[in-house]
Image (tube, rainbow, N blue to C red; front, side, top):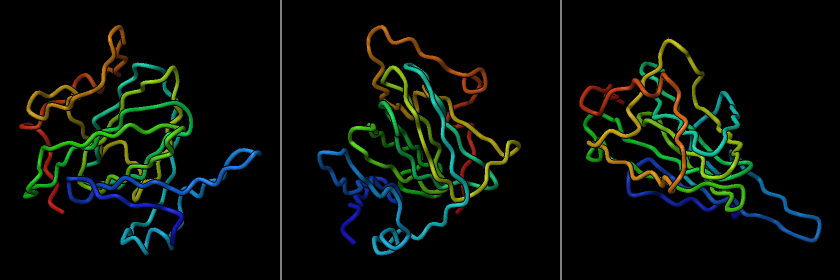
Length: 186
């Protein structure tokens, strides 16, 4: 192994993954995913879809999940910086409704693994950010669910800087709170 460092978060199932970066005078090289290294670290998910998005400063996407076909996601930032958040929606979980946030950037090269049963979202902190994620299931538009990004029952502490104007889609403005949301029975 040696190419990745896997750090569990306080919420069971969430992991921060730090790949080893090889730098020299030409630049750097990093292996962002290696199935053997992940298996050795106890992460046996299978990815079926890769996605990439670009967003400008102040864009807040989420908090999203799929109900009947939940997706695990391995997320990272290719350019810029985001604050990435996962909320536990696993019915019967000791940490149901708890959240974890992590700054991900092109500079720190951290990755965040969010398993099935979590809502996910992020806030763009840089002028622009390119965001990439690998998914364990396919996206199905009719299967979408979401949570209000500012639900006081969850209490996500988004790092909204003074003067930052939030840009939130109409769909994301309409999601309900934790008390009204879907609970995964995994």
